[in-house]
Image 1 (spheres, rainbow, N blue to C red):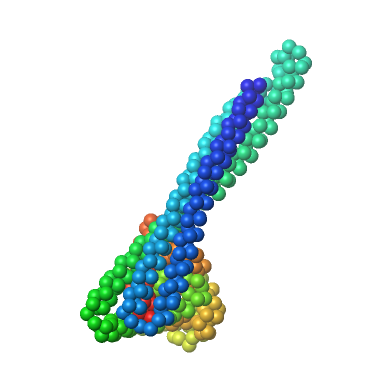
Image 2 (cartoon, helix red, strand yellow):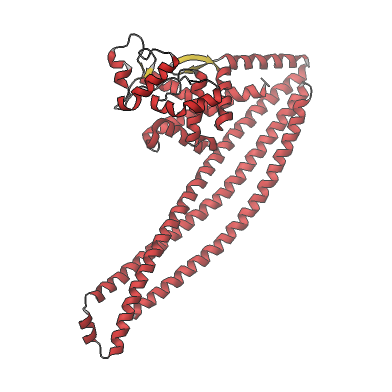
Length: 441
């Protein structure tokens, strides 16, 4: 019995040493983090200063030299952003190491606690196997009997304490795991942002070299550059943006609707349009039902889940004055139901949830699932609810997966959707939205 008490005391000493060691390691991490934060603060100040210079340059009258100066400032700013994100990654790297070490330490404590718990329980079972009379008769004197009884009570108290400690350590481990997951996502976001900034630098350097080449010839060549920019901007805006189960619209209109939706939800316009483009591509594979001339098997009564979507569908189309038998709807896919409506591909019961919010942003009441402006707004609202308004690659990718697969978003078979959306959003941002901003269009 005394040996058990000794072991418990030893365990407490070990746990105390672990805490002290962890505190010492934390101090070193804190010093490193403070240094990185100071460095990051300095870089952020330099970025702000560069932005002031850039703003002043943009107000100057148009000339080759002015545009070269702007490009130089944009390149410098992008490089500073890369430096800033690298510092962030360095800081996150330390944090990830710290969290990983903390989790390992906590798991070790749980393992030791379980081992001690097993030993104590075995000794408890040994004592419990004897009756009170047997224990009394086995002792030489009465004081030894009461000593055994006290020791048995101590063991039981120790059991309760260890159960509580293991439970607390497990809870702390889960907290640390969540924190680690968050830091890993931030590191991924930072790396993706660095790659984007590198592409910005490359584009700006190419544009700068083009202007330097023009300046060596003649200033008149600058007019040709301006004309080419205006032409390219017009081409971008007039490019048709395909929408699922709805007529394509000019990209300029799609961007305007997405920017309006972004202002009301906080979701990035390029990401909103990336989702809609992915849905349009997906529609080519899934197919469209409920069109004029389709067989009854492709009608809304057959393809929608009756208990969930029939009533809201009829209410929506009747409010809009549409014929329910000829409105394009998605066909069933696999073993699931169909009936998703318009570019955003909301089933009627889901559309009903967002109707009033859509109307608040667009002013269209009742909201129309087949109207591009309403559909784009609906997509933004839903994505915001799914966490896309937090921004960053990780949050947007997860929101895209949830948009597509709901509770099964984490399954590998659905990963293609997130990758497709993020690639399309990057293309829209860098090859359509950014050039329009650069051209001042």
